[in-house]
Length: 102
Image 1 (cartoon, rainbow, N blue to C red):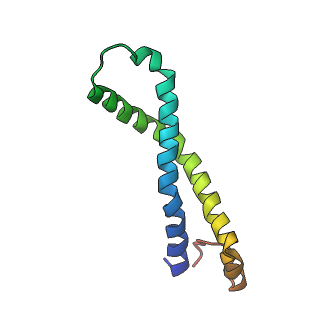
Image 2 (cartoon, one colour):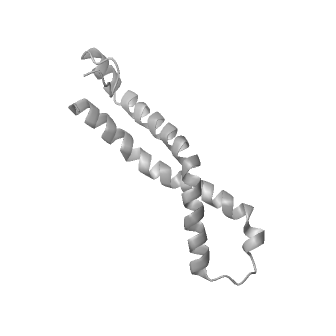
């Protein structure tokens, strides 16, 4: 793994983790609003609701991961373009970031 590959990966993972957390929270709140009528007024303890939220969060990760990868890649390449890093990579002969041909 070259230095440029590590740099691109580090630049990608940095926005990926918060974006994944936001997307999981977004989809989790969508599930809560969907089932709020079934949960309200039942006298459930807070730890039972917390356990239900953890199970729901695990079930929405397959929906949230592709969206967060898309947003993180857009943010990463936008940041590269804003700081003229893409132009520097192209001018130095690197055709695309994270190329696996080397």
